[in-house]
Image (cartoon, rainbow, N blue to C red):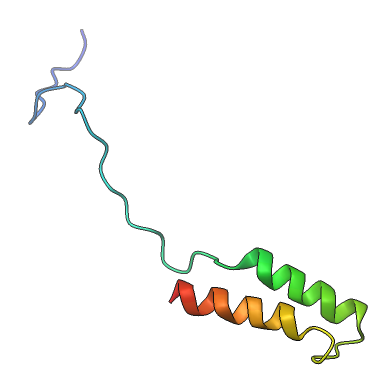
Length: 65
């Protein structure tokens, strides 16, 4: 014989989905960081040669905060 289950709320699907918070520590600006690091690797880690990529990465980080 199956166990008796008494739900506290009706077993009906809601018309909306709960708004879940973004998980803490979720990575942002990964694309910009990858482009910047690839530029550094191609240019022997020279900041002057990669100034535009570095600026784009810092702009992205500023927007994310």
